[in-house]
Length: 584
Image 1 (spheres, helix red, strand yellow):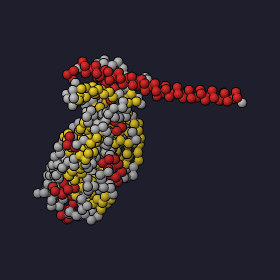
Image 2 (image 1 turned 180 degrees about the horizontal axis):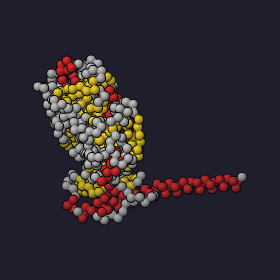
Image 3 (image 1 turned 90 degrees about the vertical axis):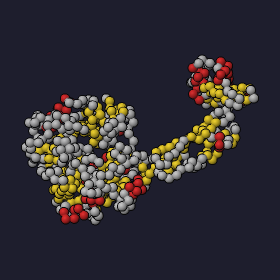
């Protein structure tokens, strides 16, 4: 029994001894070493100021030298922790000297692992009146709410009038302004606080002000440009709920009228970047009245409507925008409107087929014409910058450029890239597949090429020449082979119409008529074809032609392909003027 007691006592003593040793090794010894390092830092700082007497502070002032400088100039050899030999935080360590009544007092602050010096190194706490970010409507007066209090952990309350306040706000100019508040304590520990003042402008109120009569921009307006989803739009006007109607300034694709609302909501709308969608009204009622020729020029109000997230301009939009017979909405190409003329005919804007300057013309609703999508921005949306001009369009801050170094898989539909001096437009980005279309035509198709079907495996076929000749005019290094679907129609192509498909594993093809950003006013081939009349191609007014044996078939064409997603973005902002430069 006694032996067991003795043994138990020995074990207890050993456990206590081990615990004391552990505490010493983990805490006491490192603390001793830390204090030694702190003293070394303090002495190094004193030597520094002895050598550099001109840097000593004036009466009532403080001078500081950082540990980084003391290490660089060899006033101290090294600063390390004792328990894992890691380097101390020299960037946040320093020596300060304060002069008071002719005497110099030195303070060392060292941060080393879990230990730090017990001296004041924190600046005062500045508390502002109001919020850190303040929004101001353009034209409204702004007065800085100022400072509520300044408190230091050593000096106590500091008068607010000692705070240095800098920054000005011009509430007549949209933008983000910064006001900085800075103050130091008696050891010159400095605190800087920033308030952001964002001068913004309500988009709907701006439209109201610029369109005082009926809330529609008119004539050849030059102050209704807006950048949205990274692309340029025109503001058309306001609806009864003060939502803002905008229309793309370019043709996006070619679609038949009977399918266009399916295409807009199945292809176009999903391509819009998610942050931009937050600003849009969804399930909106777009006009789709049938308008007789007799009422065409007087039609300004809509009765029948179709719901969707994206739509088309109606004849009423064009008529409401007229001033002295002119409107910024009329283009050099033929565009679908949202209105039918009869059960089988649709109204388009402009007509150049017959050398006329008609504002509208009717065509079979199965024909494919240019599509310029219309979107509805929510009432309450704010303008972040811009003046509404072509060179400085309004921006609501919905879209940011892709960062340099990012993979091309981060690109967005509609953006531009360039490689080896060739410009491409991003058509779609889906499941890490990035499809692009060449911006310009290239002479890669011969005059005697066959165009009854689209088959890249058949020599002398349009498809074969595109697949095999692209690499002779541009670098193909950035492209990969990809399974490409070709649409085949018995008679006439329509987006929602019955058709079959054929898949080819190829690197290059003509774009489909229904691809985003495939519309162009150049003679160019498309990959879709009809068994009756052959491959479709585009004309110089942006319409689609499908005439077997036509003498005007293109010998140069745009092409599409899929990018290697290992490629990175180097620079640029994704616009036509400054496309993203990419590198393999």
